[in-house]
Length: 423
Image (cartoon, rainbow, N blue to C red; front, top):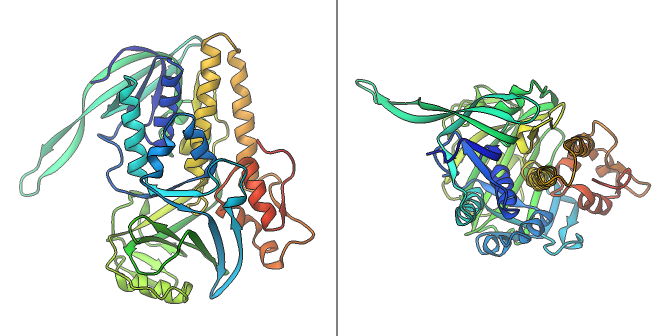
């Protein structure tokens, strides 16, 4: 049951970004409540990679050590074109305490954050959705619907969500971490335009004896970007970019999706399709291929909100931006946004800064993402840049597992230069 009708901060969305925002407020002993329309944390172990800067940030909260026991470190990203390794970046050169990527299940990260919140006396209001939001200058009034399952049907049983009751919650600030369909963003009438074409990926996870060691491999051909991640337990995750998809992919239904791969239409993703994609795009992958644990088609939009919020309602994570999967920039930058925004709000509530100071969050985050998307000047080729890299600057930038000054460090290894000090 949702705890109180009044709070200092209401966070909408309990994914990694929302959970970490709630954890930050709890660290500062500020009253916070967090809700999510789902009924629990992520149940499927989708692969997730945490940047070194994210691990360093989580270490301040005493979380990193527990995550290290659950993940697999990666210290190199190699870029291939067919059989040829064209270039690579060494994460060991990053100026941080954890100069590597940590690959682990998203469910593991969410479980740790959720448990740490519980230990601080903050429980997620599962099955609660924000339905309406109004600002009046001094506070925000939010109508929260408590949802419940209702079963029905005759020959075929069905389950539908219904509204159990509605609550009126008053809060000083709202943090919208509620994903790409963010009600918080919509309530503020903030645009969320596409900044690059949609990209669909066929994703497979399976066991193999192919040893990637501590290396992620990215395969860039003329039309597609593909990546293989080493996972804990002798497993790998392959993501193959598709030229187009023949069904509504937004549902993210497992396996049985009709998809186009190049010129062929497949009714579902099978081991045979995986083997064909490997032959065509990664002929060097000669390891054993077990039956995929799961396979699915995922649609990645590329969007950037016109603003990161205003007045007493602010956005972080996918509520404000969406990007591709290879550099894992969305969730990692989103968690940094959660920390930055939360600490700014704490200062405002404690009268250590004015509410107008939150405009700095908007300006800095917009500038960072406009550079990463290539809307404004981001990484550019230097005099010694390899021609293969020079022809693929925008694609390579989105594949680098870093942001801010760390993105400039990795870019420099490829002969790319940053325009100036990074946010």
